[in-house]
Length: 145
Length: 309
Image (cartoon, rainbow over all chains, first blue to last red):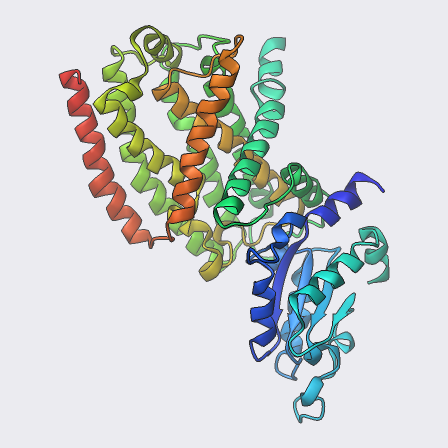
């Protein structure tokens, strides 16, 4: 493993994008920063601007209204970027899958690297997803996405 | 000529202050984590952050001045490095500098803040413009007490404006922190340090919650990496400057090295504890704080220094 991939894995900056969630997954994401889980020991931190992001956490169903916004935020992010769908809504649509304004699961809109199902998923599940993703070097992921 | 380039690029300059400042920023994050009962990032975290940012894609905004946008962080790094050289050479006791270098340092320490403003405005983002306006007001607020404290220090240590002479005076007559005017001046300078480093009570230029990182919102990839490096360099230059003004420098000979590291770490600890125990203030609260209270403190320090206390 070269130093580039190693430092990418050791310093993931996370941007959190809510595509219209019920705020439940968002609270569980913030749980990761608390002393109990403390993701900063893996070098992760939440950033305020998508230009600094390495990981895009998407929560909530993608509606017709938010679909262009999600696409725009994805295009604004510097590559390589890892996209993680947090919760049942971006993975499949969940209970909103038959809604009139549902624009399809997240992987119909942007390429997704990891799915964390659950309503809401536990913080341990999110950590496990990121750890599984980190098994792959970043350059491979960039090729795939 | 060769020795100047060595000073600028290797020893007190870019390489040394980048690495030492990175370590200090790690200490800052680690103390923050311990204060919040967390474990904190690993030792090499600043290095990982820097290399990762260098390897990422750099996005240049469509609307905005591209050359200014790319050059602003370079000039910020240049200003921070050259002020670190001017500060660290006398503080370490390597060179005696020249007469009046205190004033040169005062000007050079402003270059990073000014180039942040220029870079933010060149990016053409409205939130960056808000951050730049706040940074500008913050400079106007903290610059006055900063200069007044320097005047108090100059009066106290025998009217010299050469930084090396200030340190030499303190090593014969005792550190300035031992006197009442020195303590008041140190408190004032610590607050100015907090604002100059952009740390929490005065980080409204980078308010994460409200204006999404403010002045650095549009910067990405290697440009952001240079910004981070500038922050690291400032993180050693400013505490070392305070050590030189109030704690009689950071001598590097023999067992004094341990004392020097301890002095630096005490200042970093104070800065970090202030940042962890205070919420962010609004910009007009910060201006009021500096213009009223800190100026009063600084003037009190000058009066006490004139009386010789």
